[in-house]
Image (cartoon, rainbow, N blue to C red):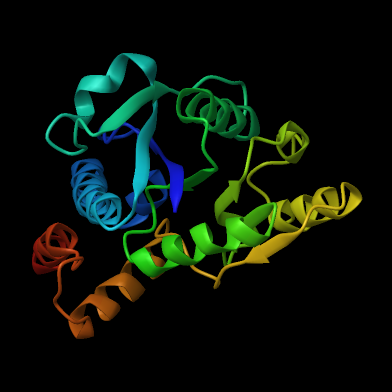
Length: 228
């Protein structure tokens, strides 16, 4: 499968990232955790690229002046795209459209808060786009962790109600009104809260060590909890 894959991320700067975890962690710990996520996701995406005919990788980042924050975390294989827009929907659409214009390929976008997301999810997403207009990965909070399409559809991102529990329902309603066929991926959860971090820690304890194991994330989590 040939496709463009966009990773959205804010810069891993203390006090500016993973702020919901500051209820239990120091700002510096939140930033270190985010850096570990990025390192492990970067390795996973490079493996994904090696396993497919053509995968173009993009990093959609914010703030614009913080591109250097990703040095040593995200490979130069990722074309950098600064995030542009007044809300999440505009930023997502612009990133998708930029990647599509550069690659002229089906395009998929996801975030940097899902280090456990398996390569198989992307393989399924690629396969889904061969038969359907869209692929959507629902998240447990009522949104979605991944969306892909053969070409960018602006109407999917016109809603101003981003960040609430109705995002997925609103998207499905919009898709239905335009008669687009959708393939749904398995549900997954972001790691935004301390409870979700505890769940991630538990899963890593029993996780099989392989090429895509989250070694950087595991090291940082062990360091954080040894301090507690």
